[in-house]
Image 1 (cartoon, rainbow, N blue to C red):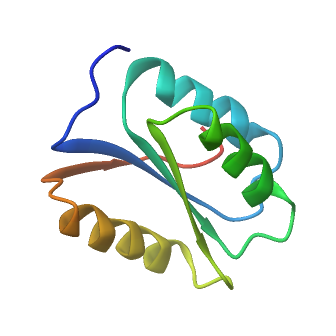
Image 2 (tube, one colour):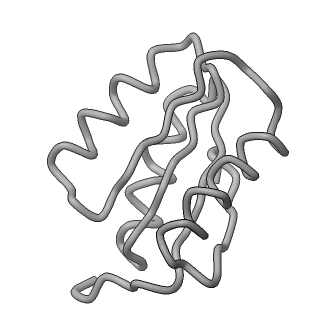
Length: 97
């Protein structure tokens, strides 16, 4: 993936996904940029590991909600920030692939 879209992004809401989320994010990034993950109050340590991945990948963004609010709220949170950033299209994808 060479070009980073300024209008379309992949959004992955995530709550205590286990190891599968890292494979899912790497897979999404192999085909698209940018990819955003909304960590919905996870307590499994995935937010920290995802943030570490994002430090090495400028096309990966991790948003962290302080407490679990449900998948819909996580998606809406990401959509609100994406719209404010000028994105016109968002594809959501489950964190377990």
